[in-house]
Image 1: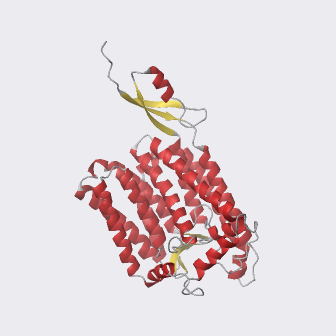
Image 2: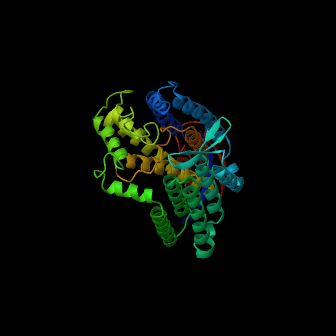
Image 3: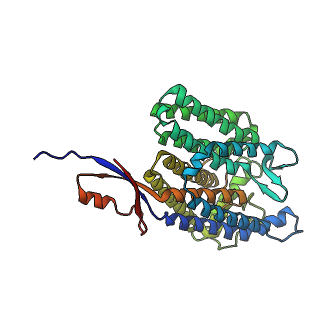
Length: 409
């Protein structure tokens, strides 16, 4: 009997979102709120010289989380293809918002950099919205130009121009090398995942590394950070103060930590205790066990995000999910590595945990988009084997409520 030729057929399913992401994100946000509540009032006393005892840090974070949850819910309900339709206007709007930091009266300077914009009683960091807007735009652009990526002039060159403009906007306007590293690295991964050839990705990586080196050389304080990283014990009271205080905080926590709210380093010893250095406070208050749980939570979140990207029904969904999960993961990796002295300090915050109403709003919005993508699953089945077809059509993510929405030969 003539053997029937195997033929694959694509099947698309719509089902419930990945709820494990919800659990992980609420865990991280909850830890952040607890730490900001216990350390924020100390920062307020220091900033106001003891005049105010209102924990404005905690209140701001709580408001950002509340607005972010609304954005999360809305984004999880909105079909993610709508972001593809308006990717270019969203990207242009984010650039305009970035340029607001150049307008006197609106821009707010802090720590030698102008990264904040204040409109009336509302203050925000434009770069946080720029991150998600860039990811949406690059996902749409790469999906549209997928067939041209192997051509140097139509694929690699336009990509290098885009990534250069994005990096320069962040570095020059905001003086934020850390955020530029996160955004550039994220869209480089998206470029590779989109199907770009190895040689093209290699050239883009070398160009990115070379550009980062040049930007570092042009700013003396970046060179100083690198030298401090290479020799942390040379100036403990000066350039090496921050990283040494961070290591003291983490080391003093031991296995189980001092206990919630019992940090000593938060009392003016550790710079940016509620922001960049909050991982060190976790190490001091909750010890090795607490820091390990945070790392495990981020690792699980990364795994679920990659799984969503692999099961996405189209190129845009796959690239968008990849960009979101790598953005969050890169930022967490850089922050944790800096606090453990595995790389130079960058000023990057710890996602979902560090203080920042704009940051948590943008992150929760991104998680909502990721959850919407998780509702759709792509599978390939063989037409010749009904039993195999039945096996493959079972729920990809445990739970009821799954039904097929489309199939094609």
